[in-house]
Image (cartoon, rainbow, N blue to C red; front, side, top):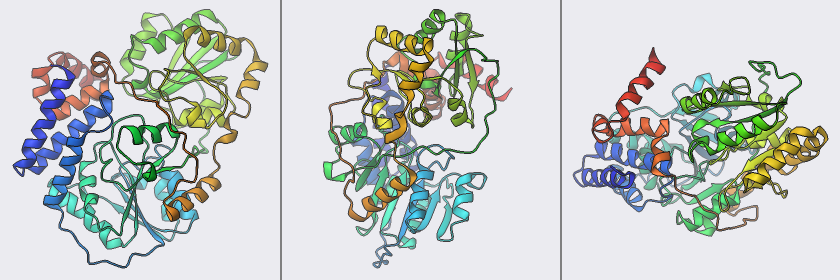
Length: 477
């Protein structure tokens, strides 16, 4: 079965279930459809999912207009993640606290108390925390979210939610007009549901703003540009697993799905660099589908040159201790590029014309993206062989990244005026859909298939059976 055929089957099933009033099952299939779009880049806007959100909301939400006096100093932040140093939770919360807002922080993370986010909020006397309960009945789940938002009496709602947060979106769709809904777009390169539900979209770069206006159907007046800064923690450096003394240290990292595809094009770039430059060693940090990376390392005899170091919570220090940062491809990174910039590490970034580039992430006027392999090898070769050149290329890369104080000031002005405080440079940049082979090779997508289709996944895709057995053994044995 092709990806397109499977998607049509899934979204049609969700639509039929919605008409029957079987909303629990409808939401299951709608979430599955949204996740399929997220992983495949098939499209960045899907009218059928938007329609389902609104229909579910109309049937389940009992509108409450009892609160008419909203308190201007109150704000609600609904967060699907609540992960330390991931997403933009800490940047926004610190800015809101700096501005003196009363905050209702609604989190779907039931381990919130283990985070630094919890510690920071607990020390702020104007913050109220609410863990969104998990209810099996979607009617109760949606109604609970809706009522908690209404009861707080805040005129503004910030949303940082998953691409498939159907229940949350159904809850907020029918909120009173006195509550303005802002989406924090942390996933500007991929699909997310709810573009027609929000009032404003907070973008962190012009690339995302361009995509939102041209593809998601969000108007220019709804787009608010707010570049962010990276959170720098105080976790000490844990070292490298092998000695890198006397070596030029290359580094790349992120979710390992970002480097899959195009017949391991990115990894082959790294292999060529290492084979050409004996004085170089490369470390990779990340998580996700490790099999492809580890197999590539073994098959090419790179065990001592390309070292996978797994997930590192000291990632800021890891980048600080490298010499050259290599941005991932075909999907580029975000946070790590900023870490490299503020540590004045030269950034090497292979990219596609028309795709998102690293310049927009670090707000640099310097051209960094490279579009042909010859230029890529020439540039990284010069960096490896010349320490002074490395220093000059890395110097001042992070000078245009906003400070925490500036971010706080700009967020406050943005919320007060509902107008962007930064100029937006709209462009024709786009998102290129992955091939079906590349999509089906992603471990996260395979897990999504099994969760969504359940036993049907093995009927439609028998090749999943041996992979799933191996996956279970790796995870649980």
